[in-house]
Image (cartoon, rainbow, N blue to C red; front, side, top):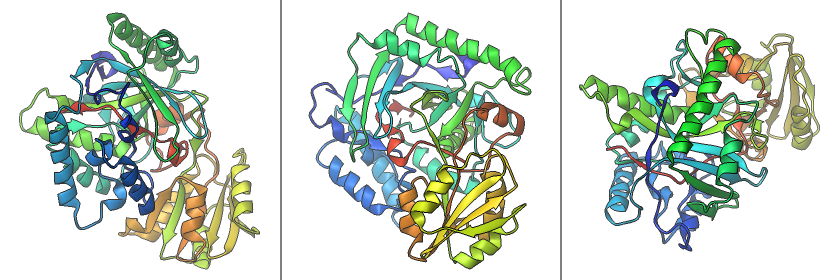
Length: 434
């Protein structure tokens, strides 16, 4: 499947997924979630206690700046080896996995687990590969992720690749193919995050079907996106771009040492359709530290056509931002220490395009002064005490995303999120990479 940038992986699943009462302890949410909420991760640890769990093989990003990073990475690698050597996994099985995920907000979000060829992916802003990032990549965030992957015997995917399939020709058809067959796993997800079910696809007819449908989308892209005739565009990275970029970095290191092919050339991902009705694009809000309400308003006054008006409370602020149509200009909600304001600007398009440069200028050499938050409640919690300033962003329209990325390249980093925090991908499948 080189022409569509995929490899059929050998997937590892934990044993006895059908009968193991503790299988619900195995899947854990993506490591880049709840980055300001240690309590969440303590509860996840308690929920996973007493059974093998993917929690023991990941590095939640909230702990990246702690003093024990090296010990954590060593423990992760040790756990991976232990799970491989003590019979935690079934034998590797070659194929794809079709997934249906129920979340607290949506039902039956469809996906397909496959391995993407990192030779077909590049995150540099000027690159136009087959697999493209939708948002800017922060190079400072790559070294710790690379350190986790470097020398690891296993990988666990939380990367989501989007396809532009408005006819829903691939994933719905796969759902029909498996509906009368037994799943390879079916389990509730911890912390009231819904349920996930997976079916193995390992017949030659399955592979042919996937290949043909993706080839159709690839062929269609030639006349659909700017420049696609010379530089085809099939997949857009919807979530997990920094993890994919870290995997790319490790593969580039290996190539420099003379390696020409290796499992690290590929990375497990889940492919989803941007037009799946169960996928909602959510704005990623900002929380800015070491700034007060008045200084934030002054900072944003540099926006074109700037205007500012007060809001009564946080609830009104959230409501106004959510109802913003985006037909002209942009809107932001500001919250800090019990003070609330609506900022409007004549600058249109993706809201982060005009906002992020101002925040980056404020942060300077201290990017940690800005955090990126998925839920309104978390922004309120962090900002309403006056120790930080929260910025609510307006809704994101997913139509036209592929055309925009094809024309302009990556959007400003953290421009959108696919759903709420609890809807993010949970680790389940593994693949040997060493």
